[in-house]
Image 1 (cartoon, one colour):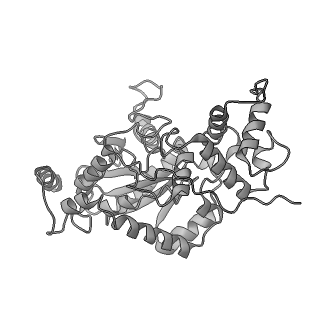
Image 2 (tube, one colour):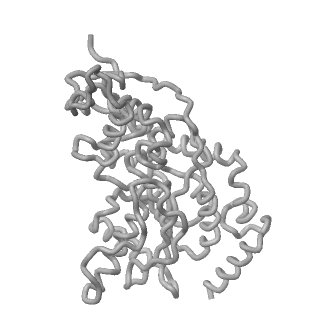
Image 3 (cartoon, one colour):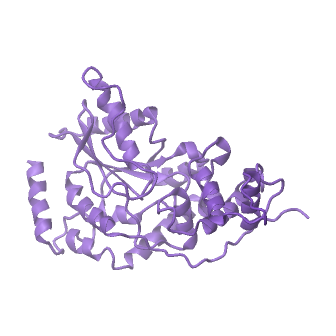
Length: 369
């Protein structure tokens, strides 16, 4: 009998919220800085492009021109035709990048230079960008690469050739906790950027979305049970390619059982004890890390069901609108609405202003002089 992969994944009782204090603080800061910002660079993980879309960012940074950057292209098999189907119909700009690639950083700077040249009159203090997105999608790494390519390149006579970081990076989410001061990434034209903390949703749609976010590292690796993550990864891999092909180094046949897979991983790695028991969590984490870090071309893939089945453009837009309605129905963002107005621009008269808000109003008026 031929192998039949699972079509349904169990509905585990997984926490759907990981919204923290510094996420709320960052959203408020975005609204305060918005009048000073000329362009938004929204970073999403190309292994889970729908799950790493945060509709709260669109509310707070309403009416700002934006380019969507799909990061970690070296870890993903996301197809360009699918992205074109999602974005071109609505005239949304996007790029697929590796945040560590100098070539991709140059493409971004060239794209922003074209936008700068269209501005009439040119901004007196240079063009200002803001890089936003979910936690751990590569924002700070991209800032460092942009800085190295667009600015440090012109200073090679005065500084060490050793790569210097202007933004702290790490393999876990939450390394960046505060919105940075302005960082110059291009001398001519003068372009600067704010690096920002990753912002999570108040709650995600369902347990499978949280599992996708766990697999790409948007939440701490210990936030969701590693064995459940490994089981979900197995479920997705069996749906993507010829079942069993992605773990053939451990087994000679496909399986729907994560216990069988982890046993064979332990056996292949000589980690079985005399009674055939093994460290279940250790084997699960080992396998998950192979995929998170894509140690080899065989570990490139997609980590969310919606993208795997390549939903049509209209369906994706419908899902996106439904998600916005779901978030809008919550009260978590009410403080932002009170401060910035319902349209998220800070221009509405029907809003409640605090002393902090008024302080930024004064700063923004000075910035425009």
